[in-house]
Image (cartoon, rainbow, N blue to C red; front, side):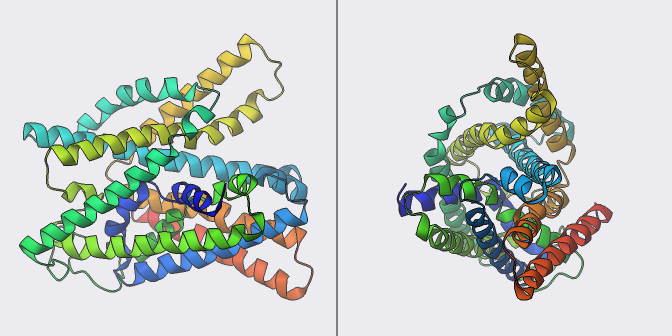
Amino acid sequence: MGPMATGFTIFKGFVASGILYLPTNFTTGGYGFSGIMLLGALAMTLFCIKLLLETRAALGGKMSLPEIGFACYGWWGKLAVDVSLFASQYGFVCAYIYFIASQGNSIIESSTGNTLPLYTKWYYAPACFLILYPLVLVRKIQAFAKFHVFGDVMVGLLVVASMTYASVYVANNGWTGGDYNPDMPNPNLTFFNPKQWPNCIGFAVYSFEGIGVILPIQDITADKDNYFKVVCITCLIITGIYFVYAEFCLFAWFGEMSPEKPLVTEYFPRGWFTDLVLVLFMLQLIISYTLVIYPANMIVEGYMFGSWPKSRKRQTAKNISRAVIVTLTIVTALSIYNKLESFLSIVGSVSCTPIAFTLPAWFHYKACAKDSTSKAIDLAVIAISLFILVFCTFFSIISW
């Protein structure tokens, strides 16, 4: 792939449904502090990507992330990678299912004019299983890879629709960022929110959720010498989109926001076009679910059935394993239905922080850090990442 195609592929790997929660997330830390944390997460992510690429180059330039873990620390290094990858992929697809269920209810409510009770979310459990389970049984995952362009288009369409609807709202009602909103935990929109600020750190890490695709994309890019430069440019563009999108929508709709409606799509004017956009995005998330959960399935099946000979028994066991994982993701997503804010913060802190920050620095310390300065930097990154993991996770749990 050339630089442009590489950039688009990285963009798709990093940007998904989480962008729809960004405006609400900026209320948890404050409109200024949340932006600062987003920039901090960008800086840490790019630095750790650099460490990861350097480590891979030092080990021959061909290894996957689990192989790098094994080369550096043996079985325990590989296990650390696999556990972190599984947890992050699991958390991502739970967010996808939440979006599908919540926006499905929104479409039904706008069409019928009735407010659905909360328990109706469980009606989506069998529906999601019947749709997702046959798709995860597909072994040739390349069949879904061609839909990545559709995913880019849908994310772009939702961003444009959000900005357009927010602009129309401001034109008709003015900016509501200065309004008093009693429905929000912090009724006044402030630069810093002293009550919930740790949650925005976990989500800032979650926002750059695509570090797992960095090495696979490097394998297929044509200009490997300038690959990191393309990564930096793409991530800077993504951060710019995040920042403008979050701040604009936040100051436009703050007066309307509610903790029960964490996604910005809840504030779109209802109509056939909005419903069509949401249905198309739900379709994109169904396809993305198949792609994102695939590595998690491979990890589980490798540990559970890797030593089994090829047979119908092994195939059946793998199918049952995939059914269990699909069921667990659906149950998890619907169980945290009203706690998306805390859940995404926990996902960012517990699963994204190790894979994005801790492990690259840990591996670089073993394979590349030869002088005291390099070792000190790697250890500092590890210490910061462990602080984020422990502190933000603890805060999210006690504030649940």
